[in-house]
Image (cartoon, rainbow, N blue to C red; front, side, top):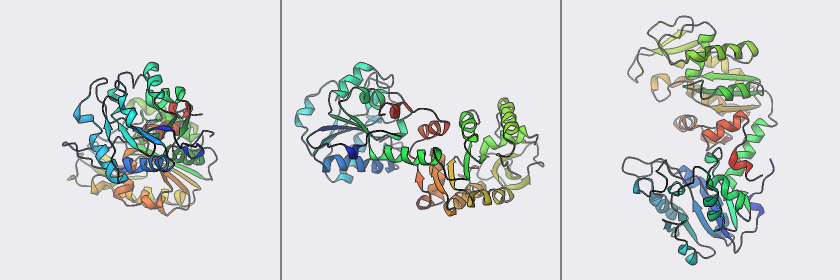
Length: 389
């Protein structure tokens, strides 16, 4: 994929606007729970500062009402954490679109954080006037927010159109390089794991991937729907009955690509305290809930993953948050980590599982995007990426 990169551009003496992804999780008091996304944004910021640029950084944070500032969604705590990491002051500019006087004090080698871009009316609708106004503030626009690359918004797409120069930051570039490597010219065999609660949210991913991969492992509620399509009982499990026909069609069209579970771990209620029982998929009772895959199923997956050349992982196999139903996902994570395949993983639940089972260092690339990761897997054009090409 051809696009300009920040590393290719001489930014000395220029005003550089970086669209980062600083949408960090916070607790009920507003304290930052996980600063991974802030840390991931540092290479682009430090590179521009080191090379003598005047740096402006902006990001969204959650879903505030557009046009209305409120403390709950302010980037104030992000500015404080960023200051600590960079070991320099990072002033937060509140009404940065309405009052541009702050630009007079922005000098080369300095940095400011521009308040939550979703406080600006027109951001989410990619308002052209807003995009042009923001673009006029910079000489170089840098998109380093893969997590929002699937959204056509003012600071993800519009500014790229109107800025004098637009490019991808190191984080966005690394994401695109890794995903392209995994999907455009993958080393074979290629195995994809697509799991989660609903087929409906990932059906287009399944349809797209099944044509590209050699094996497609489904898990979670998705697997339940496929089991029902195969005629197995699923009891009281999470399942989308209205999509059974879709699953039946996929199984008919690609009979050799879906290694469905042969045994599962069931409980009577959706809770950490319920008793876990391993059952064959043809022995599910009416009041059973399928909450994980069994040991025979993971044994079925083992050779597929050990012999793979490329592995793409999105979604846990079961309710890994409950210890009694975490073994399937734990075993899967371990098998991916031990495989010699090029592995790439993405999605919020997947990242949580990777962290829980401590396999971060063994996964070749961990994507920071959720929705963007899925849409890339589907083969869709990401609006923010298209704006840079």
